Image (cartoon, rainbow, N blue to C red; front, side):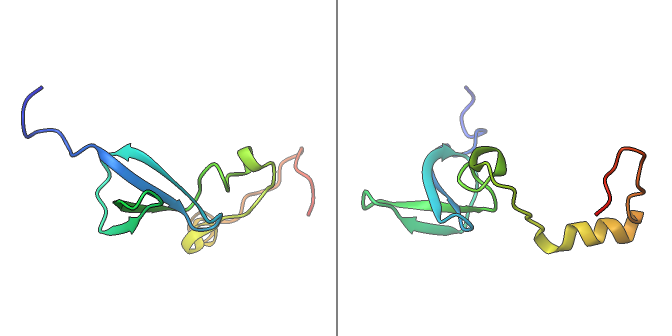
Length: 90
């Protein structure tokens, strides 16, 4: 490998705020936050919106996560979706 061209690959804590779930894994993500982990070491902290603890596929529950009004912004830009023959009424 060529020296000085690869990002720093190190342990990072990923924290899912909606499920109060955190885990340590190795990553090259750049963060400004740090956290003291259970082993007493300080690691960079990356906050995520969805993880395996809060994702409907893993939990079996449906949950609407609309960050910063993405659905409304999409509907303003492109209009509401038209109903097709197979769609159910609300």
